[in-house]
Length: 528
Ligand code: MSP
Image (cartoon, rainbow, N blue to C red):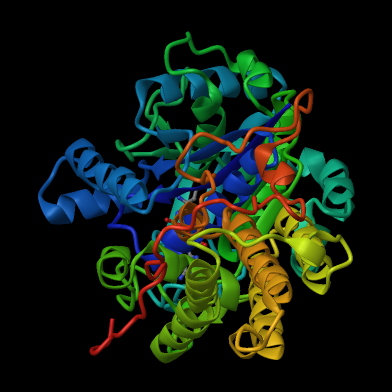
């Protein structure tokens, strides 16, 4: 079975900002975790390129919409490469193959009697590309998210008969685990309880969209077409576009990760569309919180964004991944604070984890001929660090399945803290001065080195590069960039990563190379 997961398809009205990178980095950690566990993964990201917002942005830039989309989507693709995102697909909704898929999907929905003509009146936010039914009654209402005036719309267009799916959607959203975190379920329930209304799926006089087959002058509403991008992305780019084929290519998705602002589209509209087309529903929709800066949602429209390129250049991938995943509970809002960012990176990664490896390896090299010392009593599974390592491994495995990156990161960090504490308590530098203590010191250093190997293993889904550097210094095959070694036990099909979570795999006598700092301290002299 394939583990299919998606990021939202990002609007190309502007370059990516840290808010979009946040979702993508989180998905990357999930995708890596699943692959490391031995699952076959299909990780989809891409760009959402139609609609009025994009058309207007292109006009303002003096470009044709297509040229504008080419430019910005290339920027996204590039950015994900530079962040070493492990996506399997990158879908653009202007791909001609996508048009074919949309036409096939629409034909099913129409044949099912779910498309009717109707009149749409209401306040529209172009930045959200959404009607705001709950717009306050003032004369010039604003979008609460974008703080921009809403536009009055009154037009005849095609509607999707969402109202027919009331009972099925009610049952779906009540299913435990469909909407995550559970705290978001109530808000969707309240929305659905008001009664689902048919929603318009076409626009007239909007040239920058996919034409609706059989309905001259209509183009698809951008959200109708965008959600279907998840399906187009699944098809092999070399195969003919046949909608039904998605069932053999990883549909239904296990997980859609999105921001909380687009939960309704994914947890209500999208499942209803799929039901209408006779396709199975995604397993889970996870709505995460917003990254804020000074308490305001970081966004292109508000102009208070952090540029992922600047962060990459000045701070590096490991630092940003760590801060975003370790500090902000996934699901809740989080304020980006530069001081806290540098403190966490320096304390956790450079000091606690980096120095642990450095000093332990130095001592082992100095006293045990540049090699891993004999394990002695430290080989036992009841060694305190063995117990701690196993517990940390269990936490990482369960919490990552639930997208609780914070607890996973803390578990790996706690193991490093425990190993440091053990080293300080045992003080091998004192023991070494006493007669006949060598095998005791050897065992202590072995235990701490082995715990450090575990820290590196457990960090692989979250910080693939730091994990690699640590494993290389410990003479181990890395997971993240190299082939997935060390080899499994003969006959075992289990994943090398799960296999590596076994106490005592570090081989006594293995040569230790001269340690290099695995994580440089962040010294940011000016604001990001
Ligand atoms: N194009 C639609 C999604 C279509 S999916 C079929 C869209 N695009 S977006 O570019 O505006 O937003 C993409 C995602 O980025 C959303 O999930 C949104 O919540 C997220 N974020 C935008 N700003 C954000 C923050 N400041 N913080 C966290 N996530 C943010 O919506």
